[in-house]
Image 1 (spheres, rainbow, N blue to C red):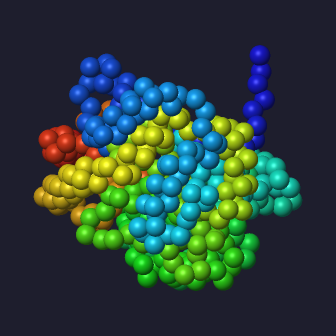
Image 2 (cartoon, helix red, strand yellow):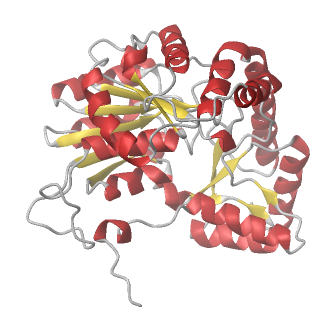
Length: 397
């Protein structure tokens, strides 16, 4: 049988991060001792109070469908948490999704059109380009895929020449954003760089978005994981509440990756339209998982502080160990990633490192940052030390 696959799917590459993680798992299954610094997953167990809430919800019979946008208690808890960051959202502005990735997918599908509502050809040529989606590179790998699946045309602004910071790149952004730009995706704290954009930078971005009537997705999935800085929520800035979609979730800050729970918050008109994608795709997030989410928001601040403190110690250790090997890096102030400059082709470098040193990293080119490898320090200090030693012994540093 010969399948004819859609052009929009053929425009998209598989996830590079998951590919490396799968390779690490294969080597481990063969008996290799792999230090996996590729995966964007906290190595902590889900806090006990969250697990208990999930178990209790099952016992209480919360196993059926919920309202499509989420159980009222969780949407209210999300609105309350966002209010702490100065965001004026009510529960009617919140849609609960199976993971933050699903939230992003639904919003992009809602806002971005391809050619005459269809995806452009695999070559990217057409009589009318799809809506323009602007990414700030290095950017999480799935933003590109989501934009392409929706039929959009991507424009990428390289922040690596500005030490991964947005503020010194505002003049460049001014040249990129135009009246034809439909969507700008912002991720602060950033995956893969760990950069946290300053309030001044985001105010400059705000001015350009308002001038050109651009909608902004603010991906704040790592908002709870910062060091020595206070992140700014884009929707809290004057003039941005109605043109910003705030996306977040529970995977990173609450060690709930496998629970698959996320959300987006936006103007009610956008919520109504995105709700169509939501209801016709996933229906709703798992009932008992949503009840566990309420406990996460209301009961585990102390556990978050402990995890962030551990990540900070690991970051400091990794930066110091690399400095001892003569490698200078941009110190991240959020998330749990670090961009390591590498010589030559970064894809080949990562393949050699995992094959010879059994250390898993992700090529920076997957994020729009060739010449780097992303390292996740969501691993123990012992394993971080082991990884750096292997890289040094193998001549990779």
